[in-house]
Length: 522
Image (cartoon, rainbow, N blue to C red):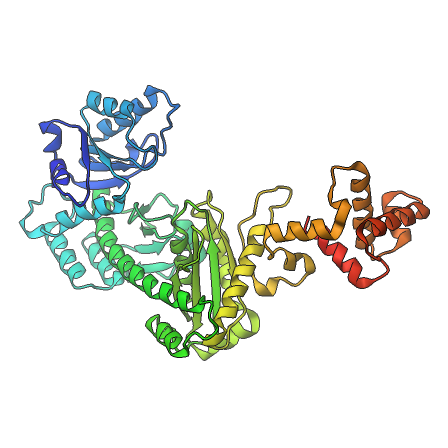
């Protein structure tokens, strides 16, 4: 496939910004997506380079674009495909740099994903192996032909990986998910614990199978032992696995559509939603008769579309459970929800008693978060719903737990800490209140504290501090006075002022709880 072939494909909608005949007739041997300032060491000769231009900013000088394009030329890249989404277009300084270095540059419109470009290149390359000359490839022709047949037959990833490395002597090799699940391994590769596999994902001997996938949906080709083979050969093996991966992603997208239909039924405002319709939706998702169910809701950021992938990857670790991952019709941007069903009586009994599902996901959460550290991931998990009809209540619980998770702050900071919260975790008044929306908490605090809510008044701040210490010491006058270094009579006077301003009687337990809750809501 040549660079000019991409321009003829209306489905991609690419625009030529610069490139003469010699540049457009160069043959494409591979594709690499990158947003590094200096990607040269990761490129192979003949590759097409995809970049979203995140590395460039309007304030940058011309030299930055010059260095980027020079690295492409030195590595032997055939063309640059620059995404328009980040900056609303392709910077002119980058076009000029490509002109100087003789690199064709094409713009990629917002509606065209990098994955679509990658699929187009590799499907064209691998779909016609029998008629292609072997020169551009590192893999032997017979191996490419066999792998092409296996892909067409929909073979399992273990077989595909084993046959892909057979001509290398079948060395130990793995295909790993972003969080360390073993997708496939050769017969010579021993089982790899999840924690070690998660570390291996970042090793130098690991190749990303599908660079255009989100950080959570990535698959990785991992060879723990050095192999005397051209790097390009390993890249071609990774490209074969990428085609298998994309087929699995298409199945996931179909399943997400069914899950979204199920969630819409669960979230219906009518309490009279037809049980038969709910049953059919559960069956379509493979969750019929798998109760008890749990519901989990996860939130990333409004501009991040990887939350569905993050939740899907996390739930793949629940090997004894069926899952349906989708989006609620009323979901905020960056939000995903799933219904989890227990597949075996043993797993059901374990989770019902000890919250095994929540424990597994909590242990996984730091690894999941590390795959995209810039996007804090928060999640909320319901208690078990014993019947399909109680899934609506479980969804409400999951949303409440999610709000509680998003309200927590990292120690010593105002920044929210990424975490997963289960309803079972909300065992204190403070924890319970974190699940209430922030504006509701604020309104409650203002009305319960009355004039004391105005903490810009120094006198009010002093009274609030005294109230807080008094309640913390269970209403003990002596211990409050000692903690504040005050005379007991002064404490009595201040508490009387608090009672007068708030209209509460701190001799009553319910009024103490009201004011304690108000302080926690501030």
